[in-house]
Length: 111
Image (cartoon, rainbow, N blue to C red; front, side, top):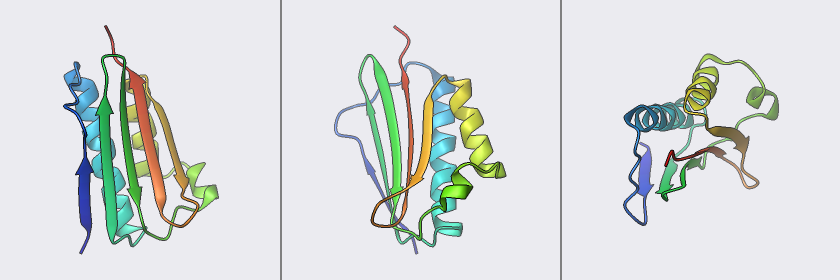
C-alpha cells in the first residue's frame, strides 16, 4: 500500500557503476524505512545529474524520523551513511517540516 513516484526531468547518466549501485541501494533502504518505520503512504524519489553533480532525494509523507534517530547508529541508517562515504557523497536524513522524512545524497561526478 505504498505509492512510489520517480522523477527524473532529464536523462541522468552516472558515469560510475559503483556509484550508481550505491545510490540505488540508498534509495531502496529509504523506501523500505518509509514503509516499515515511517508508515508512509507516498514516497517521491528524485534523481538528477549534470556532468558535474549527481543528486538523489527520497521524500515520504510518513510519521517522520525523530531527530535523535538521525544521529543514532541504526543498522539501515549506518549502511546508507557508509554507502555515501564510499562514493564520496554528502548524505543527510531529516524530518520534513510538515511530516515525513527527507533523505538526500549528492556527489560530484568525476570528469
